[in-house]
Image (cartoon, rainbow, N blue to C red):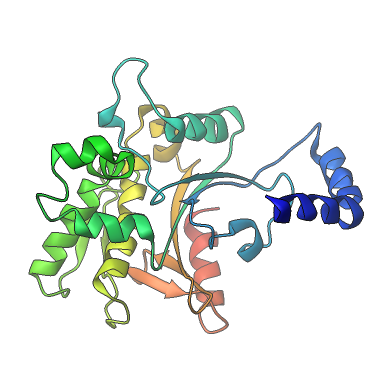
Length: 255
């Protein structure tokens, strides 16, 4: 806690005046560009690696960057994630939703272990909110991973996208650069795109291309960021070699 207090004092001395100016600039007319779902992992700092400023995007964080599918909610039972989608996309008219997973995700490492029936037993879920959260909302990711594993990590996976007619195919880690848990993390990130599209209040905007869903994946040990390209059907590193190609894809299909 002492480090946090010292950090606040440093903020007062160095950054406060600049941030207050930014707050005043966006106070009456904030124009956030994205709703950004990511993990609570302390190594994930999305505003830093995207160079976003005050007012630029909504950031929603939870264990495993999971967005529960709408089928889990009846009547007024819900969680923070769909409420954030409504606040961002409907109330604030944001046109881009981004899900960002990452390597060495502790939640995904735990999800991988939940393949063991004893580890994921009802008794253990009752004493572990994290296991209960993942068993309730992340099992579709694990099931897709198991399909992938049975095919020796070779066959592509199919995901439902914005509308029933816009399914997308994904080749997950075709160069076999990552371990099993990281492959699961990438699959989980793509699965959340499907989950987001399940909400009825987003249906019209998705069908009329007023709202778009994207996936990023961050390798915390190299600092590299990957974008899921529907044209390439895989995650591509965002670098000098791929930037123009990815930018063209985004401008063609998502602007």
